[in-house]
Image (cartoon, rainbow, N blue to C red; front, side, top):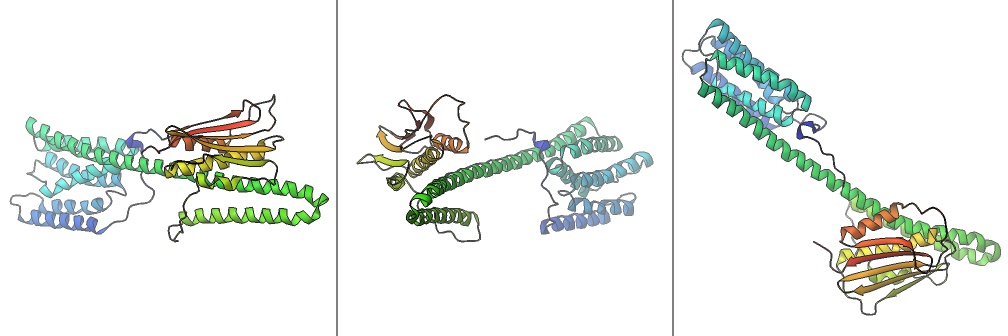
Length: 379
């Protein structure tokens, strides 16, 4: 399965702003209350009203930290930069509040939810504010080292959670891709088989209607039956995909249902041969053998030139089971047939179960499809 190999910093942010929840409002309320209380009771604080107003200006930034991480970081760290600038120019006392450590949440949000462009714009701004703040507070080397380590730890923590989220999203996309491929394979196998039978009956009906008009009704009845079965199977698949509707599950067809594909009153005739004492198979292997035989038969009916017989043979060989579908159609010079979705889906089925599939001209003429699958499906 092909997956995009991109840096976690280039993963697109989900479309649409995440809704502001109760925890967001609780965080804002706690921060605002802490800022007001600290500003009121902290002794010796200069410019107390201004510091309080600037601290409360962080509240919208906390609400926007996930939906607009760059704007939130610019507001929060901008407030910190204004306070550091005032302290540096006016030589005032400590203008910071301990509650202003909430800007670390905004730095985390920028590294966690910001796009690569937002990080490229926000990181230099934060760095400038940090350097300005250290100069304003005349921090020593120990403070510089400790503060830098704290900031890097916050960014590293955001990067870890960002990587885990990107990995989970990538895994979900791979699962959806696998489901789409499996659904396409099932639709092709089901619809192609029945539609091929309808096409063959319709072609025969055009000939029979002119020679034996009384048999035209039988041909039309066969076409109606195949069309009804096709619609029934497609509806059952759609019903399974619709979560709001309860689906009536039925066991998948397997090797025991292969004799139903035999036809003796049509051209080409279809003969099915099974071991008399066929051992029980793992359910995925049993279902895959039926689908492989069904799709091989469909291809033979549609593409084999002048075929009068199609043989389906299933045999146990040690720990494996071998399926052979052959026809007696004409083969000759010409370009090799381009493998379509049918052969591709058949090969995928065999490979998923640890088996193999080959298709090509048979040793005695015609076309031969051969699949070898393990009796027990791999874990």
